[in-house]
Length: 73
Image 1: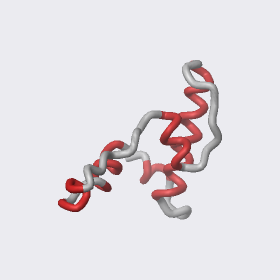
Image 2: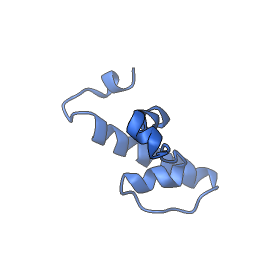
Image 3: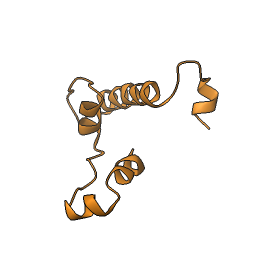
Image 4: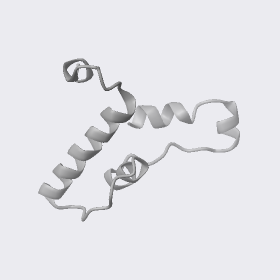
């Protein structure tokens, strides 16, 4: 996710605008994908929140027909 955010901020115009990459913290990343807020800093909750975020990212970036084995390489 960090590499994607950095790529979005490249270029001269973004440099002039002083555009910074979006935060890649778990809460802010979940918000970008429309996932609900959660109580942070609890191991089980953080693990579930991370798994939901991964599912949202896979759904956003990959086609439905693509095998999961291809995605996870």
